[in-house]
Image (cartoon, rainbow, N blue to C red):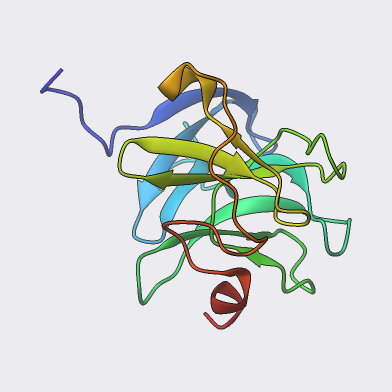
Length: 155
């Protein structure tokens, strides 16, 4: 499909809490967000939520955001008092080893795998490779193709 428009709103099943119309996913200058389909009459917006509770404060949910300077997507806690940030996409799949409520997605070239940020558990994407084998292991924090957690904290 060469005729798809990346900026076209994508309908969701969520309902606007203000007017009751369906919410849509839009792309703005700071990334993707939920917006009322009744815009401009209704200007309700919300950040895109992953449905994953914040591992640091336990109160908010991880939401998608974009750094204004670097235009890089990251995920942060919806609780404004919490400073938790994550620079790899969280996937709502619990870690089978330590029970962390999510894994993060990593890619390098055509390879895709998932890892736990706490214990370092890794699993290959069965859909991409079809092998179901665990990705090559490295020490926790040394994840190929991405920065270590300490580098992510410095951003």
